[in-house]
Image 1 (cartoon, one colour):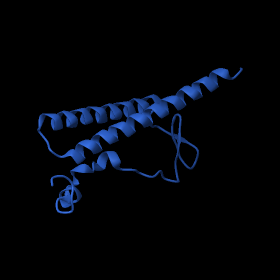
Image 2 (image 1 turned 90 degrees about the vertical axis):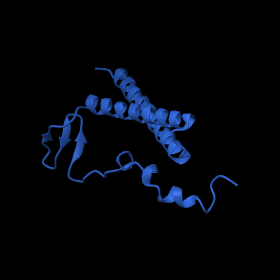
Image 3 (image 1 turned 180 degrees about the vertical axis):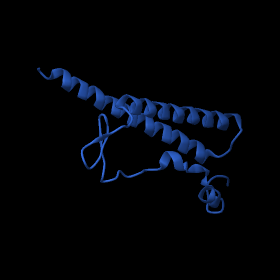
Image 4 (image 1 turned 45 degrees about the vertical axis):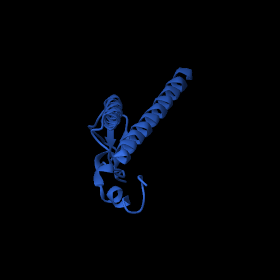
Length: 122
């Protein structure tokens, strides 16, 4: 009986390729700094130079695009027989899917904020 069973489960558990530490790392914010529109505001209230909102958004879009490309390549490799690690292909596809869903939600929030600003009267 081929497939996932107790005997071959160790190859999935011991294979660290399914975890991409760079894309799954979460760094908690420090309590000393608060992110602002013009950079980072320190405890004294002064603005430190940082990335603009547009640059941060552009970087996030590029990251989602890279995840989509790697998902497409992994699916193509599985279809052509270059790899037989179905778990890795599925995880790559799910990462890309979640990243795209988050990006769509961020876009929706930005559009909502823009519409609210447009409704304001001067």
